[in-house]
Image (cartoon, rainbow, N blue to C red):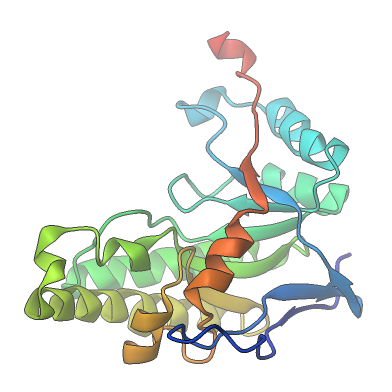
Length: 232
């Protein structure tokens, strides 16, 4: 198995004037520093029931054959079936598993948050036994989404978006993940903006400088996938 695994985030080199201070971001596996080389995984098919376990095995094997060691299960897709994680365990891949929230702003009413908490608890408990998973992600780029829309360009509008974000990802999703798995690292968003993180402490100690986070994304490419035979 891939144990122990540790996310390492000491202070990074001093940034240029005007830029926020940040941290490094890498993993240690069995005490050895690992340079993450990998791909973002999108759903293997529009119709999940037509995707076979052979399709999954082929796709992950392509990552291994391409000298990759990490696959990010993109939050804009879906939680994968058990056989996907079994294959990743067997092939020795590291997985960055995101919750299924992506590139959008979500409500924060009590009924919705209760459903989110239940979803996250069920998925994390289902997947936590897989040694391939080394980090949980709260969403894909939703911290960045807080400044994409015209209303967020005003102070009042931005404050509403920030409050929505904190309520969902910091106050709801993070505790749900921690309640089901107290061991692995949890990261808020796949696009981290140092300014927002400092102002509202979104990740409470896991924030990194924007330029460091953007640089880390250059190591990921989209994995080419085979069309399932049923769709060919």
